[in-house]
Length: 188
Image (cartoon, rainbow, N blue to C red; front, side):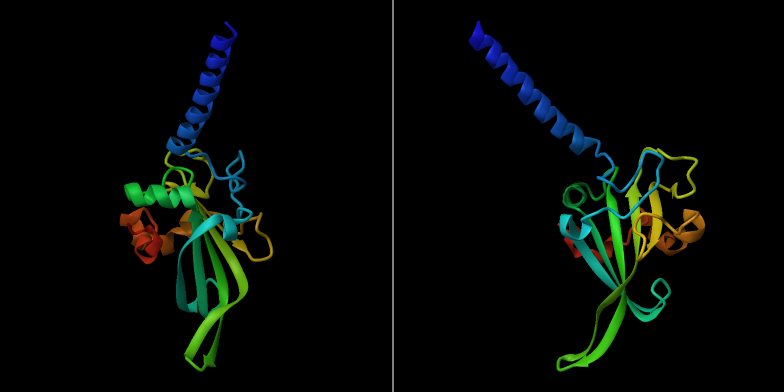
């Protein structure tokens, strides 16, 4: 009798653990602290160490950083990268973080090089296939959108994604508004 109860308890624990893991993989919740219950987006803590770097852009005459050359470094959670490599799409709840740097260009022995200097800001996108925040002007077209100044990672300066963000991403509409071709880590 005791052996049966122990076995049933172990089975219940196993089902609870594997069911929870399966649920998290198939209906990915919003990652950590990136989105609150009202749909406010913030830059997630630890993205530099906990996420995978997808790739980087060098932007001449960068309007986002206000410098001659800006550097944009893009990150995503490992499970979202793995899902993208399997399916060709980011799963619901995926958080993409683009960290923008003012570029510093200098002559080195290897040639002219631009490296990241001071942080200029952060751009965060959160995949939303369910339309969770229909009345929030920072959510639409399948994503949540927000830009943050370097000195305040919790309060966005964006007011409407259509006016503040979509213009730059519209050319990538065929790839879910993400320039995925520039991220080698997404390729199988």
